[in-house]
Image 1 (tube, rainbow, N blue to C red):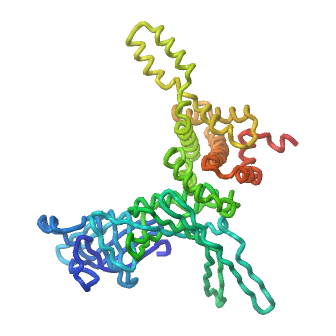
Image 2 (image 1 turned 60 degrees about the vertical axis):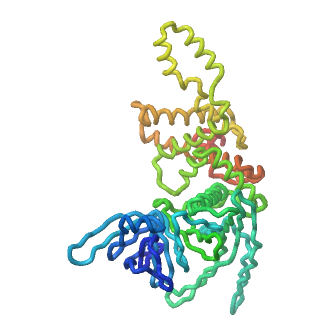
Image 3 (image 1 turned 135 degrees about the horizontal axis):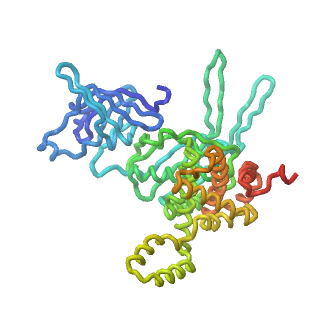
Length: 471
């Protein structure tokens, strides 16, 4: 199918089964078909049953039942499925029995992996940044037409290498040309591409590799203001030259989400890209959901207005709590509460009152939002910003305690208000993350001045005066 990344027939067996010397598969191998979708869903359909060892044989084997090896006949490649589980079985009294498996990850390469229960370690990972040609564009592609011909000239940029928390990161740019025939015409498509090569000081498991690859992809979302699905990464086994494409499950609804033009370009951050990786890794570790709740709204999913708004507010509240633990409580409020508690003579009433007021000393949500957003370089009227933060806090509280809208409110009108406030919060949140990883101030200021989109959102929520009103 067109939306499948791989469809191949072959022979499959449990990875613990020994392959005799000089052969590509053991006697226990079963024919079947491996299908991997573009979302990384891995399905194996077997025309038979994989052999299960008895207890004595199982004790003597080296491997586990969640790993399956395979030889893909037409592609002449080997595969290894990890974290596999049986998803279906058909036992036939007469005729062939069949079974199906699903796996979390699949490695496909030219050599068979000698898999052990201790797991696999990888020394590098490389993946193409599909869809980011405009962000990496360097205007190095020149086309010179004449009356009878044209020439195409491309000067490949030097590879950029950076230090990273786990080792080294290289940004490799090159020109990719594709030719095709359509209705008797030959077409040429040339585009500049970029590949990230991450080399690790210490070999990593494939799950650790996926976390590091995801870290870079998330950073590019913030820098480019666009979310694009990348290609599956190619990993190199530690101590070997063999490489394998790693297919893995990823979000099924994820799709390209491109905002044009990009807020920054690679040329603007090329000199500090390594530092940005370090700071992004540090912020992701330190603030956790304070970062990821924003990224969750940028995956290309169609979210309900309520979901998007509360995700943004929850994320900002979490970010404030992680960044300012000393501001979590209001000292004057605590003093007042202690005086009230002391005035209650009944011990049971005092205990009940303390339980009911256990969160009363915390900084209000609207104040948390204001403390985060007011330092950002938007040059906004502070009274307008406070009113905006108060409205956002009220929306969150209404959703949490009143089901979204109160009895006397119009739901359709509320939806429009939530959408407008979500759009404005998205701009604030995004700039806040750029400031957090120390993107150069002149770049952030240029983004704010150049982008007319955010002004429209800010007018809608009365953060700035409407141009039509001022006219």
